[in-house]
Length: 378
Image 1: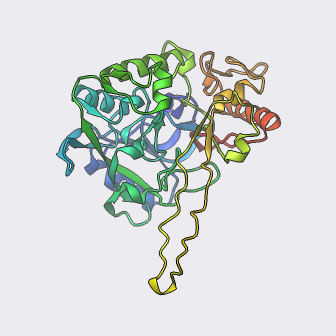
Image 2 (image 1 turned 30 degrees about the vertical axis):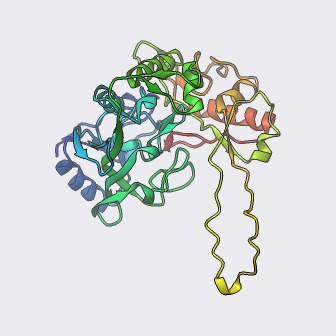
């Protein structure tokens, strides 16, 4: 695999920050990627595996380690054990939106609401990407990955990845290391064959975003087109001519809070109940049964609340920036921190910390960053 002259990470990340790494390699095939990772890990120096650079916030200092760019591409169609479904095995470096476009063109449903999300397929399970109520956990079958500690390659079922709201056991959480350090090589999804005809749209969040009535039927191509249009209006589709897209997408996660805490927020704050916690089956030995079955414990489900609403209603409107800063909230979407041109990582970090402080002071919760932070602190 060729070593290439190091490229400043500011040129390879959508937030446009980051210094020059010591070494850089490009991997165009799995056969190049696996030995490159094993060699880099064995040397004991920091290793940054780079896909589309869309979910990274990198500091200004030179990266003292090796950057390996995952440039593998390709989609393989496989049979599914379920009638009416098909599986797609996709290389980790494949562009995510290109995969969505392929699926929609083939009449395969399950990822169309995630149109326009920047980045690569291999990064998608790491933070369980999602949009408008659709998440990759709903269609993910398994991933093929290489373990950082052993160098072994294995197929891992989706159920073993700890997929939650924008998280997995593979993700570098802010302030935490991943539970399972590994790099994804391929991703296998299972999608439903629905063709090009109209069908009901499931999910209130998606219907609301697209302005659809509960009984409305549209094609998956229609959903993709309108999701892309909605994201463009918010500056969430990459465009070199639009500084509002010089971002890492949604910089803060929508907050997950208890139902009781959600009731302390203003009633107009958008919120979506998560799936309720269901107790496991209660087994009573026949010898111990006395004709009484205790009632199932009731659990209120947690609630997802809109981080964008919290930001705007803490007094920080779209386009807000600190004095003399080149970092600002997007003029289209209050959840995106943008580089208006030449902003340093520290300028963006200062804005992020200011936003966190305002939301905490106003509503009593601390927004958590969504991008992976490399060489920078909030």
